[in-house]
Amino acid sequence: MRHVFLFLLLLSSSTGSAQLLKTDTVLFIYFDKGEMFELVNPQVKLYHNNIYLKYERDSAYHTILKRKISPPDNYFINAYEFIGKTYDGYNRRNSVFISKKKLKGIRIVTLDELFDFLSKNYKERLPSEYMKNNDLVVPSLGDPQGSLSFWNQIKHIYIFEPTKRRKGALLTEVDLKAYLE
Image 1: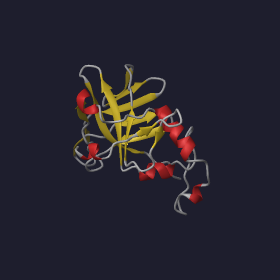
Image 2: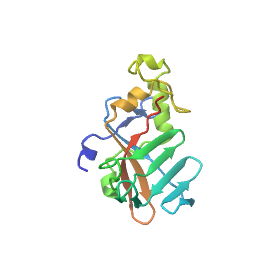
Image 3: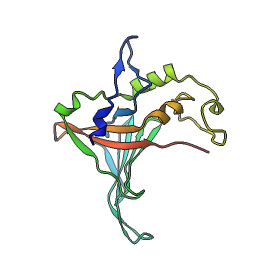
Image 4: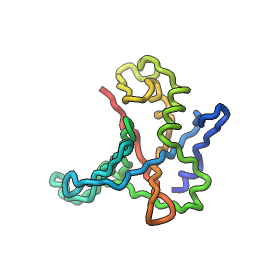
């Protein structure tokens, strides 16, 4: 988890609104799963509020693999979908608890700050200008077309989930789920 702190996401507020630096390789995104939850099935809990949605998955027996697996959680922030990292495609990497003291040096980005940055720095353009010729990208709603080049340069994305019981937060490494046709 040391590599989390090697590259920190910095924001500059020269124009009054926060600007993300284009050279960053680590992104920390604020996430609040809220209090409401319902059971989708015995292994999946769904937490949601107006902006954030999280599918938490329990370990379960895989009938084809003939062993117990721990699927990753899914995080939805408006139109963005993130999926937790796994060790082998089936078993999720556990979140890491970070105390408030260690969090002081990390800049956590809200969805509004992120969208503001993307809309100012990654203007709409044709997918052929920034993608391989054989891929057609369908941008998510509310996501400027062309911002995929920003996501491709981010090497580590972490969901920052504050905890109410303990003073600190959970950091979960995730991937942005790409929408390719």
